[in-house]
Length: 122
Image (cartoon, rainbow, N blue to C red; front, side, top):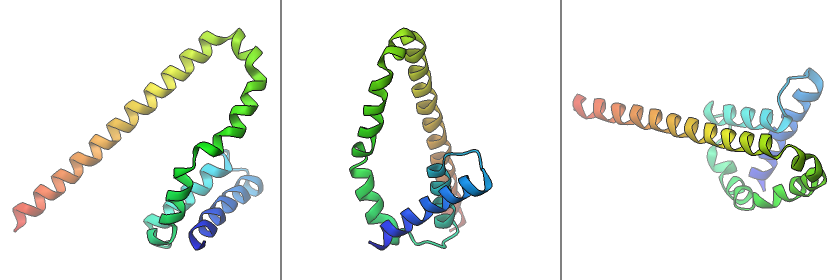
């Protein structure tokens, strides 16, 4: 329960920053960025939020149901510009996939270099 409270607290903090200061990012993104920063700075221990995060991630599809129901109201508009929607979805997915793969490879290469450097020092 503590982990869920921490996650919701950071989400609420993101909402407050968005509303009060007017930071031009969605409040949920701000909350996740703040939570990530707190984890990296070791203000929050991963063990505190791990189980709650796994539970939320496991049931993530439930969070998309309201959005999908809302999108169904825009079907006439989407059907008029289906080509733009298809190109946007395809290009966006490809960009995210390529960027994620590139960052993953970069991080894995750095990890290998670090491990190789530690082996040589022994």
